[in-house]
Each structure stands twice: as C-alpha cells, then as structure tokens.
Length: 258
Ligand code: T3D
Image (cartoon, rainbow, N blue to C red):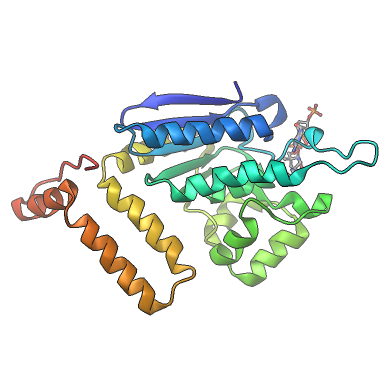
C-alpha cells in the first residue's frame, strides 16, 4: 500500500508509505492520496486530516525511475502532473484543516505537497528542497504559486534556482512553514494539533481557507464582500451559536462541526 490511512478520533491520518524510496511519488500513489482525501471529506465525523511520511523522509518528490526518458522518448509529464494537481486542488479546497508533519527531507513535488497543507510542522532535522532545477524542471504542483506568496519574490527565486536544502528552522524564520519541533516529538505534536483542530468550529476553518486563498487575487473591495458572505453563512451554523453562548456563559465551547 503506497498510502496508509488511520482513523483517529475526529480526524484521519494519511501516511505516504514508500519508505525505501523516501516516499517518492508515483501516479498510483497520487491517485491513492486523492482517494484518501475524498474519503476523509465524505465522512461526516472526519473534521481534520494529518499527512506524514513513513521512514526517514517526508517525500523525495516524483519517483524519477518512473519518468526517465526512454530511448530518447520524453515521458508524459502532462498526464502525471494532471493527477498530482488534482491532489493539490483537493488539499486547498478541502473544507477541513490539513496538518502536515514533515519528518525528514521534503524535495521537489514532496516539498510543494507539504506546502499545500494548511499548517506545516517539521522535525528540526527536516529540510525543504526545490530540487527541480537540478533535473531541468521548474517548481511544480503549485510551487511557483506558493513560494513567492510564502517567502517573497527574492527568496522564491533563490530556492527555485539554487535548489539548495532549506533547514526546518530557516523555513520557519522565512515564513514557509508554521513550526519546527524536536524530531522525537514531531508525530505527537502533529497528532495533538490535528486533534485540537478537529474539535474546533471546522466549517469556519474550512471557509477561512477559502477566504485566504481568494484574497490572493481579490481586490480589498471584493474581499470585503466575500468575507461578509462567508460570515453570513457561518451565522447560521450550530457552532457559531455554541461559540457565542459559551462565551456568554463563561465556559469552553463544545463544537460539533455543524
Ligand atoms: O517529473 C515530473 O514532472 C513530475 C513531477 C515532478 C516533480 C518533482 O518532484 S521533480 C523532483 C524529483 N525529486 C528529486 O529530484 C529529488 C531526488 N532525490 C534526492 O535529491 C535525494 O534522494 C534526497 C535529497 C531527497 C535525499 O538524499 P539522501 O542522501 O538522504 O538519500 P538518497 O541516498 O539519495 O536516497 C535514498 C534512496 O531513495 C536511494 O535509493 P538506493 O540508492 O538506496 O536504492 C535513492 O535513489 C532513492 N530516491 C530518492 N529520491 C528518489 C529516489 N528514487 C526515485 N525517485 C526519487 N525522487
């Protein structure tokens, strides 16, 4: 199985599972990942997702043995990337918070898969490599979109063109990821964070994702209207009623994701 799915209370833990290849991606694995995300989204009780990698790496990007030019014939990268892009679109559009635990190197498409998640934690020994330039490609699966937005144009160009590893701590300093934690604590921290998110007002968290992504292209004027419309939707959720009631009662809210 290239992907493992564990059902945890309130959330699903998806593990990339080709540790002998540093979890390098294949078309089959991309399809399995998409199916796991779709299944998580369809399950009423699932209110968050955690993604991590098995073994010593998070993901080494595309499995290069599967895309080596053969007898001068170029591989069909278009079809391959259409598959991976569906995963990125699903992660960004998922109405649930997605935590990523980067337990080792995240290279190429593996790095950008991690960056497509909502909150990225990394072990202190982890690194992020936009490895594409080393093999004559550009950052893909959203890399050219996410990098300048996260770290600014100058750093994005340096990362894309030099393809040097960026340490987890530097990635935090640059605003690429949320937090670096001790390697030994990574999975526990990631589970704790995902469980915590799963108990929040998750419809609101899903709409916050939408609003933040829409802000990338909206004018302030359009964004104000968009925020107003989303807030208006949230006003009729049980979680909003509970949040306000709990505040007034001076108690912790019990959210149900409804
Ligand atoms: O092609 C397309 O357009 C589709 C989309 C592409 C997007 C991409 O992701 S392009 C970028 C592809 N990824 C890379 O270029 C990274 C290649 N890997 C590395 O640079 C290094 O392996 C790492 C920096 C990630 C880790 O280095 P290290 O020294 O910790 O491990 P290693 O010894 O290099 O790798 C361990 C094994 O995993 C090794 O196999 P072996 O020798 O033990 O049999 C290595 O060949 C294998 N491995 C690592 N990365 C890949 C891989 N096998 C296939 N594909 C890989 N990407």
